Length: 287
Length: 304
Image 1 (cartoon, each protein chain N blue to C red):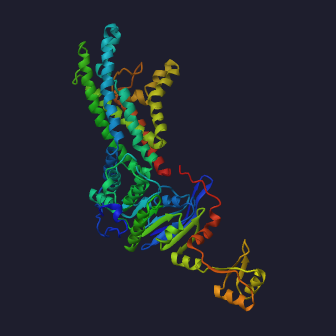
Image 2: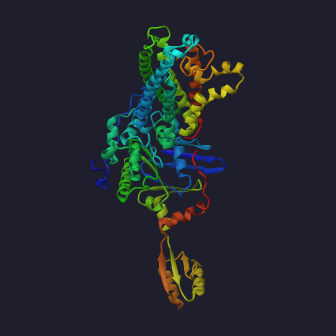
Image 3: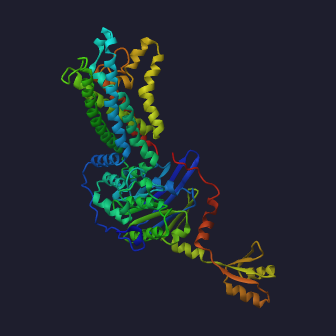
């Protein structure tokens, strides 16, 4: 019906009954839902802005911090020089990038609740935990790809800056590739943790506050603990555990970190717990 | 076919829907009427499984909505207020919903055309007028070419052309054998569209009736008479099996006899008449009469 309202009073050409073909009975529903989530993610502008800020934070903020380190390199003592992790330090931009990717993870779900589109979503797909799984899968892949690419860019930028003092690392050095990929994975899993919290809390502001609280405030609160406990507890926090895979960044807490992959596994555990709780609550609460 | 059995929903102490039992049959437009706050939207949400009932069951085509694998092929729903992200284009919104059920792009373009939205398909939904948003909601409901349609207050915010468009659309969908369930708080709206009515108030079923039957009962009518000898006339009317009650202003409301009977009776007894009018209750009055007790109190139904 071309021309819309002008022909509104004529009989609308309602679709003929047998016209629309249903998909194959055994086509996996998960694929359809992932397809749908992909469309949702790419059809709002905020996705592009937050991904841009993630990448810019990773690269530009990382370069800024690395350049500052190079400027003060002369005044660093031998112990500090020995502990310096050129790969990890060049990836310190994660500190800003994590906020952007956290916001994207939160908003991926809270925007549905705040605009009411969650009702259309669940009317089209009443399999709520599967919707969350599809969202997590699509968002996780997008965040991981963005994270790893910007992490690689930050690494090479940082090493170019460090080469002024001859203290740069090479991508082939032991543990360096793990750092670079790990920073990207950290961002992706942080985004998934944020998605879980967003689904549980439903409100954008509250969920972002929760993410900031868990990642930034919690480590600061730990400083109130007796110092003997502090280190033991802090490294198991989501932030320190997850960041262990990046190496010694500018923001690494003092003391021992967990082993890179062990810490990352702990971090994945937090994200999995948040998403599992979210999936359970999705089924129990009214939309 | 939609079957509700003892459907009940409480939000804390407030009862939004209270033991509703009704069937919505295919091949006709069923109006779902009730004053604002009667529980219509809650019932709609219960039908499509957005809210879980506190008690009772509701099925679509014999199954609970949540059991439908690709529900858009069975049920198309348009819910009250836009369920759309304002930053997403109309086309993007429909495409995401379509893909969730494995429906292709061609069908998205078709429903955009059906709803008269093809010119604005790429515009962000947040810039839409209320009428355009309603059309987008209807386009979404039609995506899967479903056999059942649920529309919550579809004519809200539509211009007269849009209202006429909806009416024609609903009638033609029902004539194709589909189940069409439309809520409204306006009897006048339903009078022109619905074949059957489910009327609720305060969450309870008040009437489940064909439009025809409702018209018949409401058009039985009554007679209004004014006379200087009202008392004597009322007595005579009662002797003849009619009921007569005095209204404020002194007029008599007479039920059970025709306007001619009243006139002749008065003439035979030499009673002067100042006014003799046949009155018909409109559908609107019939509806208000039915729901009069149900609007006194409104449950708190702020959705969580």
